[in-house]
Length: 123
Image (cartoon, rainbow, N blue to C red; front, side):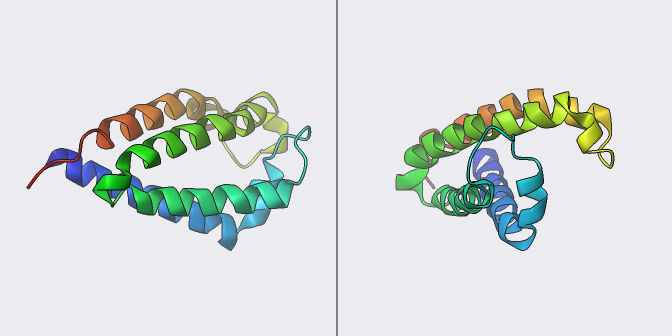
């Protein structure tokens, strides 16, 4: 039952985060590393992926594909987190501890995804 609750929370988190990419895309465009092309397009694609993968978490037979998609997504957005941490002057509204704290938090999210997308509970 606990895994089920954490799976629901994970799905809601990713759906909400993905939705926010469309509500406030400028925030995400602003944190894109400058070496990446097509900032707005990548923000919208990653937002759509978060929504779709978050929904997939709710479907037991899609949990494993959701696992790999979410882990790939978390790895793909990690450079933006690094960029923010090493360029804190560009984000004065965000405390430095938060910028650096997000880096290990990414591993926590990967572990969370892995844990809740294991073999779905029967019940």
